[in-house]
Length: 447
Ligand SMILES: [Zn+2]
Image 1: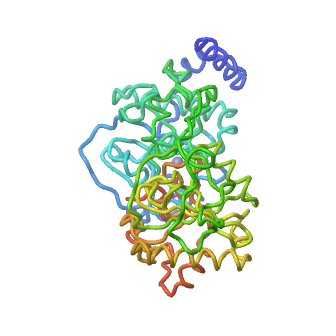
Image 2: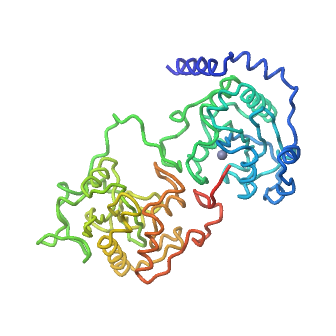
Image 3: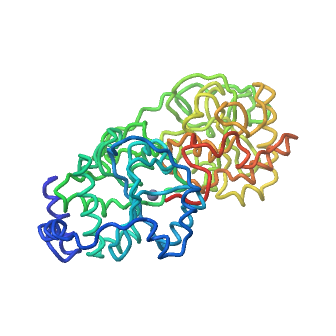
C-alpha cells in the first residue's frame, strides 16, 4: 500500500516536472554552472542596505547543523520577504529565487538566527521564493532546491527524511515545525509538504506524510491532530445530564429549578477528569448562535465548559461541580473555570447587553467566591481572567490554532474586565509578551 502511494507520487511528480527522477538526479550532479552567491550580492541587486542585516540578532556557535527547514515566501517577492524579515528581526540562512539563483550567507553555518526558537540551534533555514504550486511547476527552481538540499545533507550527514522532528535530524517544512513547537504568527502553510515530498523523493530520501510523523497523535504537539480513524470508539461519558443526579450550585447567577437544582436539559454530558481549586477564569465564544446546538457540539467532541451563557442572558452550570475540570483551553483546564458565551462572533457578543451583563456578574461572583483577581496581565500565573485566544497564544494545544483569531475577542475582554472596575491589559502589555516563550510569537510576520 505504502509503496503504491510512493510510486503514484513519483509518477505524479514526474508528470508535473515533465521529467523523470533520474533526469533530476543527473542534472543535480552535473549542474554546477550556477554556484551560490553571497547575500551581499542579493542585497545590492535588490537595493537593500546590507548593513541592515547586522541589526538582526544572531548568535555565533561552533556547530554542525543537523536539520534543514524549508520555508516558502508565498505571495511575497524576495525583496518584500527580506524587508519584512529584517523589520521583524527574523532571518534565514539561504534563499532560492524563482530563477534558481541560490543566495547564502557564507558564515551561516555558525549563525543561529531567531526563527523557530526551539529548533534554531541545530537548524539551517532555507527560504524558497513563490507559492508551493508555482515552485512545483518551476523545473529550474525545483532542481536547484534538490541540488542544494542534496549537497547540504551530504556535507553535514543530515538524513533525507522527515518522519521524526523531535530527533533534531532531517529535512522538515516550517509547517511541521509549527505543528510541533508553535512559535508562529499564524497557521499558514510554510515550506509545503508536496514540495518537500518532491525534493526528498528526487534525492532517494524517505518522505513521510503527516499521519506517519512520529507520535503525531500524542498531546505533546502544540497543534493537536485528531485521530482520522473515527471508527475508534469515543470515550464513555461518566457525568452529566441523565447520568449523574442533578446537582445544586453555589452560584447566584446561574439558573435553578424550583428545587434549586440545575435544569436537567441544560446540563452537558462529559468525561470526568479531575477536581481543581479554581484560581482563574477563561472566556470563550461558541461560534454557534444556539445553546442546545452548542451543547451537542461540545458532547460530540468530548469537550466541555463549566458554565455557558445563553443569548437571552441566562447562565447555566454545565458540569456537576465548579471544582470539576472542563476540557476547553489546553494549559488552563486544571486551574481555570471555563465560560462559554453563545454567539457567532465578537460583534454579536458586543451587541448583546443582557448577555454581557450576565458575564460580568458571573466574573464578579466567581472572583469573590474563589478569590480570583480580575486581571488579564499574566496568564502563566494562572491567576486572573483571560481569553481563550490568550491561552492558545501562550500554551497552544488546540486543533484549531490561529494566531490572529479572536475567542471571544479582545474588545469583548476589555468590556468585561473594565466593567468590573479592573485594569485591562492590551496584548503588547501582557507579561513577557515579546519574549520567545510564547507558542504564537508577537508580531505580524514570520518567515
Ligand atoms: Zn516559514
